[in-house]
Length: 464
Image (tube, rainbow, N blue to C red; front, side, top):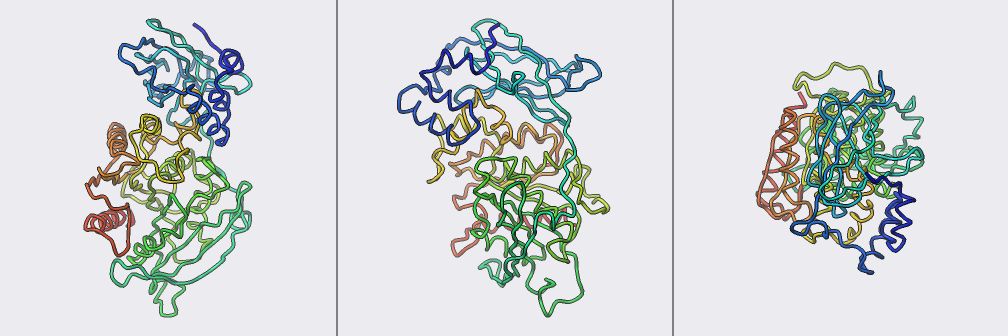
């Protein structure tokens, strides 16, 4: 077996700037390396996929750090390696933490692992540098142990609102063209967390039921619909207003540019916003019960990380409240999840991108290359892939259209299968319409209206 750390590998691959920059987690250097390699002809991700390409296999163990013995394996872990094109190969560990992955094209890879109750990790040396495993044709390579650490409970600073300098920046009302008469109060907030200013937190409440309304009756704690939007939150105002008008406190947030593609940072920002709302910091009249959360496209990956973080334990600012009885799968502060046109497996998404099989929106041409080469930096793609964390999900509604050329519907099918494998309650709404997800404007289609009410019905099931 040949095992090389990244610095040794570079001695043999100095001609490939793509690989050199790809060893960094900086999105800019990843893109520069990709552009250079592509234009110089050094990047050929599908060479290993030619018919009759030689293949080999790997075997190894996944163990826990700080185990009772040095050989304490983790059962049920998923081990993944990905080809340069993104195509994943995976296997589950047995009762002793052992695994075997077959039919891997000959080449060099960094394996990664994920397991319920543990932090995902990739094989690396004592300095934290990814360790490459060389897979040789017609042979089996033994991989050093992949070590996973138990997840630690998530803690937020206390008192949260003052610690993050929560500030109300505006209050106004707005309407939506659908359903008829939809209107809501809107409050905008900013807060500071982990070195960034988050200015995309919004609260939408029904115009007549909101505590902001002079004609409001007795206070009613509104159930919460937590929207994590993939693009700037105010671009989705009509959607938020439409759902708020149905009797919900819609707490909405979107990623901030300072975080770039740091999916973990985006997730923690959103958890702070969610916790502020459920602790009453955004104002009275919001139920402290777990919310129904919705995201789509990029933000579906953010929701995936939110779920995994909340599964590690409650936040320090969560109020004591009775848990809902609608499902035994209720996790932390989220009772159910809705993913709309969402990412299922980022490795498959990378593969489709490099094969030229998907439509890339303007301005996102280098979003996937920015994540780095999948065969060297698998953790980034793993964190974007809900299919490998499906056992941690609450009940989930999957919405996807077969007309989606950005994130193909096969991603939804794969996520559905993963959820069902783990006995997670799952509903689906698949359709053929070409309209934009959640589009609420004068061009709303019949499928769009049906989607709206489908989401509303699902939300009501978990808001009692």
